[in-house]
Image (cartoon, rainbow, N blue to C red; front, top):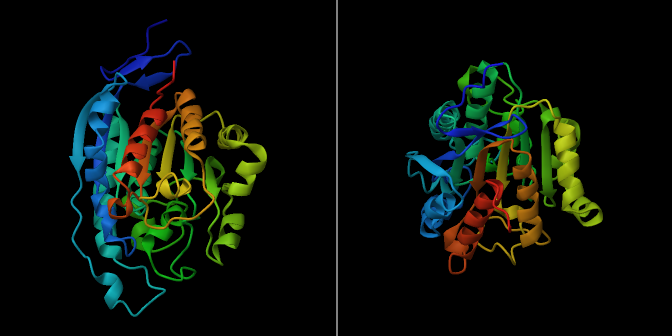
Length: 324
């Protein structure tokens, strides 16, 4: 039997799984999804927290760093008179296309795509890129979404029109057509391949939307009652073992604000420091994490860059950092 073909960026584990030892960092300072311009400073704060050197310390190569250009539309929330309109859609669509192309290329290059935000609207592009990559190969991927919020609103249900509250719905095929049809197809991911962990602050209509979506949801009460290991194990079991990769979309507001104060839409009662790390460590143990979003870091609300430091720690955990 011939040996599997492996790029210079990957190794084959003892179980036959090909695992990349290189990453592509994609910086997306998007602030267009909500009225919190400070999130545009998130990538810079993580660079200050030594993102690159701490990834390299794990034995990874940072093959490429990509900076996505985002237009400076800073006052849109002061001008809009249509609360149910999806705001800044043309600009977000352009940024999303650039992110999608960067993520897909990162995967083509056998690197792990790590997209650093910016608000959670960037997941529209990152998931589109991941989906296009696997679609071309007729393969399936799973999505684990960590968030205090559902992010599953549509223009008809959103009380604000903020697109950072809609990216999950858009990835599932619901929302503004120009965002839903990015790369020419929809949905980007099947709901049975998705798990949503840490929710505790839903808009009125979102409760029904989550229930009807087909996504497997876990509230913070579920985490309290069952523990984060059980929750993560259930999420992976539900997504299935027949996938070729995992995409992790991690909104820092899933963590309790006492631990992660530098977020735009904090909500009390979130994941602890160790729960956050443990969940990502468990995902890393699967050897299936191929792409990661880290979003909603707002340095203007942070304390001595503490949340940015935590965000870099979490990237390390998602890449497989162990205590021993």
